[in-house]
Image 1 (cartoon, rainbow, N blue to C red):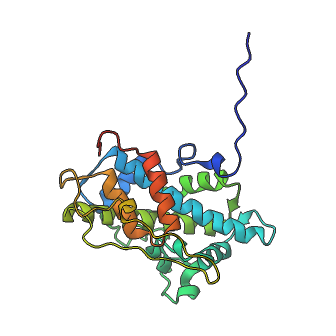
Image 2: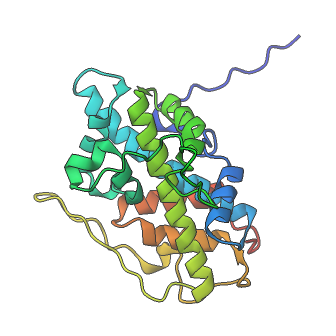
Image 3: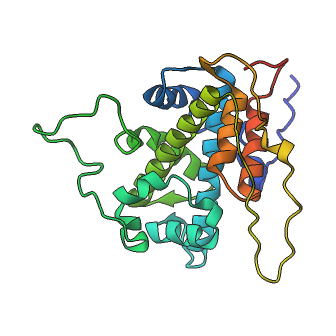
Length: 260
């Protein structure tokens, strides 16, 4: 009997490509979108949104991992999250979570909601639809899977922060995608160039790479893949992270004959 051929060894970023590690399921994405809008979400749109969220969280985890490595640690703590964001302003996303996390309370000077994330009391009414904060726990399985794929673990407080950032970011992405559908496209958009002193600036970011033309295809009742890509250009500024997120989302949800 002939032995099966050995699989090639994968290293580094290749071992954690979007196609191999999809930590956030399209079904979770659809649930979040339904919390925000009654519009239908196409399957390519859900896959694209899941990919964008994964790319953003992977960049944050990698930044925190580098900060932890400087102290010879593989277990991430909230201070590593702050260090990652402090070193790369592009990673400052999901800001709706910041006011509910003690990790960001002192750094940003925002009031801390001590009740966030706690079990609701009998007197406290539950919201009709879960907010990004109340629904953050839904992201825990995906966050832990993502951490494993990057070769690190995290303390519970760090996991909660990553859950919250993912939930807030995806909620904002859903709102912007719905806005793109309602308005028939993005009316105004631009790019922010982040330049480090002493280093050459990146090449200009082409407008057609944004995937955000003045007009959109499709009806006004369905959020499609291109609407999610357009929303990504609103949520992510700068060139590097946005470019990677768009490229990986297109790979995860290819445009087959204009399918939405």
